[in-house]
Length: 151
Length: 148
Picture 1 (cartoon, rainbow over the protein chains, first blue to last red):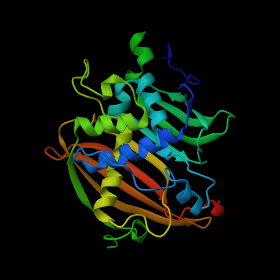
Picture 2 (cartoon, rainbow over the protein chains, first blue to last red):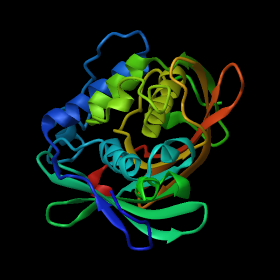
Picture 3 (tube, rainbow over the protein chains, first blue to last red):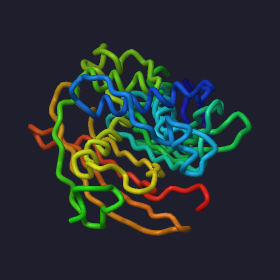
């Protein structure tokens, strides 16, 4: 949790390995949540869950859904910038490289501008070798920053 | 109007049939389990919030709902891959209330041999009409690694 917010403040998540299970759990949860009737769903084969399907699309194997990286960033923003991020924030993510099975990924957010009302951030997810796989920007209301609430 | 079959059929100006649903605690918990979100306030109501919180990224399911409603035969002949997510949050998403998601196709364009489709989605409370979320989603309709 940053003690104060200023340009350059950098926060990051714990590294996570993009396991086959994490990819599968997301796809099944997405379908289950979308279905609305409370029944658990096993998602149909996609490039995120099925090696044969992914290879048929020209990939070396399954790749993670970009929304997993997006969620790692969003979770990081909530933890550091509070409930105001949920109620009046903004998040943009672009998926620039695939995340393959067992890649270790980490979410980052760095403050790029601060005014009386808004904190602007650059956000990204990178792999253990420092290659960015997801990039974007975010905004959170200034009053929501948890480090400032605690100050 | 190009709805009714594949996502890849969609054209600029297509307005998707809206979907209305209840944002249940189960939906939120299930989604949070799927993305590894362990903060307890997303799994049950805790003070000082007064309600179970909802991750803004869950709005991606609004797109999935709209696609299932309007393009029941799926993505089309090629794999669809997500390219960009853009959410703007207007108020806390109220768990237990009914929400209506509306979508339209804002752009469809070609770049480096790939076809991109941009969908603009708004989510409102059914009873009040209050805007809770706007979501712009960009997908590649004909994903092929060889095209990069």
